[in-house]
Length: 204
Image: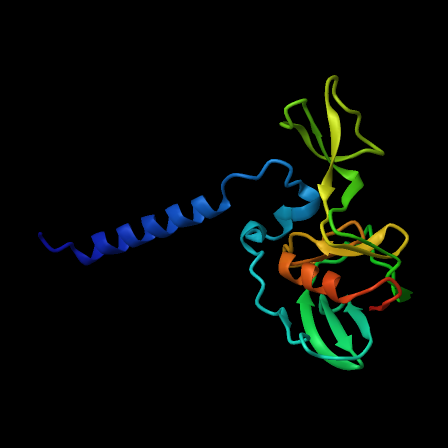
C-alpha cells in the first residue's frame, strides 16, 4: 500500500471528524420535544452535543441522616445532603429569563416517577407519530385527528406550584420553563432518596 501525502492525511482526518460531528447531531427521537432539549438551541451552537455530565456524583449510599436539597441557580447545580453532610451533586438546567425558577424554602410535596407535562409536548396522530412538535397547549391548537402527548418529566419531585425536579436535557444553560432538569441517573437517585416533606432550598 502506497504512503499518503501529509496533505492527504490531513484532509482524510478532517473529513472523518466532520462525518462524526454530523452523525452526532442528526436525528431526533419521537416525543423528545424541545421542552426537554432547549427553548433557544441557536444561542449555543453545540447545545445538541452538550448533554455530557461531568460534574454530577453520588456518595450517599450508606449515609444516614435526614435528606435535604439545595438548588443553586447561579452555578446550575443541586446539592443533596444527608444529616447535613454532602451526599451528592447534580448538574442542572433551571428556568430561563422568562420562566425563572422560584427562589425560597420549600418541601417536596409530590413524587411521580412517570410524570408528563400537561402544558408542553407534541400533537401526535393515532399511531403516535409527531404531527406538531414543541407545542404549548395554552397557545397552540391541535390539528384534526391528533391528540396531545406531554413531554416526559420522569422522576418528578414537585416542590412548589407546577415546579419540580425531574429528568431532562441539559443544554449547558438555564433553559426550562421553571422546572429543574437533571441528568437521568441523578434524577432517579435524588427521587429514590427523598420523601414527601424533604426540604428544598432554591437560592439565586
